[in-house]
Image (cartoon, rainbow, N blue to C red):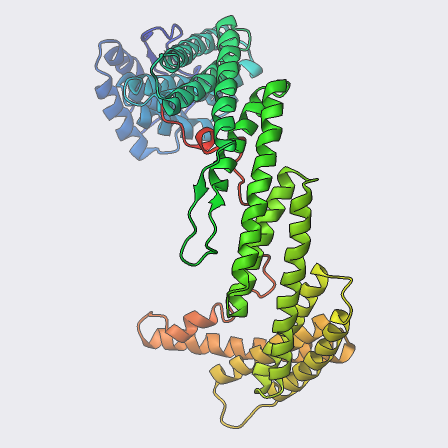
Amino acid sequence: MNAGSLITSPLCRLGAGLVAAAVLSVPVLATPVDIPALQQSITNGQAAKAVTVLAAALEKDPENVRLLYDHGVALYAAGQFEDALLSLDRAESLGGRTLSRKARFQKGNAEFRLGEATKRTNLEETIARWRESLRQFAGLIRESDTPTHRSNFEFVRRQLLDLLLADAKRNLDEAQKPNAPLQQKLEKLRNAFERFTSAQETDPNNPEAQSGEQTSRDQLADTLMKEGTRKSQSTRLVAPRPTEAPIPRPDFKEIEEGVAMIEDAAQLKPKDEAIQEALQQGKERLADALTFNARLLMTQELQMPWPKEKLAVLRMAKEQVEKALDKVPDHEPAKETLAAVNRRLSQVMEDQADQLANQADHQSLEQKTQMLSQSLDFYQQAGELQPQKQGLKQKADQTQDRLEEALSKLADRLMQQPKNESLEQQAARLEGAEQALNQLQGLEPSDETEGKLEQVSEQLDGVRQKLGEQGQQMMAMQGGQQPQMAQQMQNPMGPPMDAPPKVNTPGAKGAWQSPLMSRSQDY
C-alpha cells in the first residue's frame, strides 16, 4: 500500500487538531505501510505503535517526505513533541509547498504543547514556545487565512495573553504592598511593565494590556525618579585608598547610578517636567563629582615616579572629566580641568618622547627603530593635545626623519642572506624586513621602498611554501602528527599589525542605563 496520510483526533482545545497532507503520489515501499491501520492505532491511543512502524519505514526510505510528515504527526500524537519537530522540520524543508505548509501548521501545534508542559516550571520557556507557535500560525495566515489556521492562532494568542496579563498583575500587586523593600518594588514594577508591554504587543487592541502598560510605566518611572534623585544627591564621601591623595571624594559611583535611574525614568516618561528637572540636577551633581575626582587624580600624578604610571593616571582623569562634559557640556569647571589635564598629559608625553629619542642612538638598530617609533607616537599624541604648542611638530618631523633612515638601514641589512641559514631563520629575517619596509612605506611612500617590499614578499612566500612542504613530509614520517613548526607556519606572524582595535564603549547597556533595568529578567 502506498504511504497515505495520518490524521490525529482533535486534542485539547486546538480545535483543528492535526490533519495530514492531501493524497500524494509516492513510491511503493519494499514493506508497505498500512496508513489506515496506523491511523486507527492513533485514534485508539496507541500512537507509539504508529511511531515504531513509521520509524522503521524511514530507515529504508529516509528522504520520503510523506513518511517524514506522518512520522512527525505520530510523534505528536504520542506526546514526543521535540522529536516531532525534528521530523516536521525535515518535511518542511524537503516537501513541496502544500506539504511544507501543513508541516508548519503541525510545528505550531507542537510548540504550543511544549510550552504548555513548562508552564508551571519555566514561564520564560512557555512564553518563548508560544510566541514561536504564533509565528508559525501567523506566517500561514499571511499566505492563506484559512479557518483552521486562524482558530489555532487566536487560541494560542489568547492563552499567551492570559499568561502575560496574569503575571503582570501579580508583579504589580506585589510592588504595591506597603512594606515592600524599595529594591523589590522596583524589580516587581519593572517585571510588571515588561509583561504588560509584551501583552500589548501580543494583542495591541486589548484594553487591559493598554491600561496595565500605562499604569506600570507611570509607577516605574516615578519610583525610578525618586530613588535616582536620592542617590544622585548623595553627600556620602569615600575614603581615599593608600595610593590616592589623602582627601575624601564624593561617591561618584552612587551619583552615577542615580543619574542612570533618572535617565531610565525620563525614557519611560519623556514629557514629565519633574523628571527632567531631577535629571538635570543629577547630571550637574555628577559632573561636579567627576571633575573633583579628576583633579584629585592630577594631584596624585605628581607623586608618581614613572612615566607609565603618570600617563595611566592622567588618562583616567581625562576620562572622568570627559564623562562630566558628556553629561553637562557647558560645565565650566570640567572645561577648565580638561584643559589642565591635556596640558599636563601633553608635557609628560613630550618628556617621554625626548627621553626615548635621546637614548635611541645608543641602541642596536632593531631597538633604535622601536624607540624612535615610540618617540614619534608620543610627539604626535602630545601635538594633538596641544596643537598650539611650539616645537612639537618640529620634534616629530626630526624624529620621523631619523626613524625613516633607521628603518631603511634595517630593511637593507635584513634583506642580505647570510651563509648556512635555515629555512626558519630565513623566514624570520624576511618577516622582519617586510615589517620594516611596511612601516617605512607608511611613513614616506616611495617607488624604491615599494619595489623592495615586493621583492621581500615574493621571497617570503617561497620560504613559507618550502616550510609547509617540509612540515607535510615530517607529518607523514611521524604517522600523521603535525610537527610544531608546521603548525606555527600556518599562521607565522599571528594577527595582522593593522587589525582594527576593539571599540571600548563603557556604559553601553542597550535600551536602559541603570543596572536595575538592564539586568536579566528574574521571573
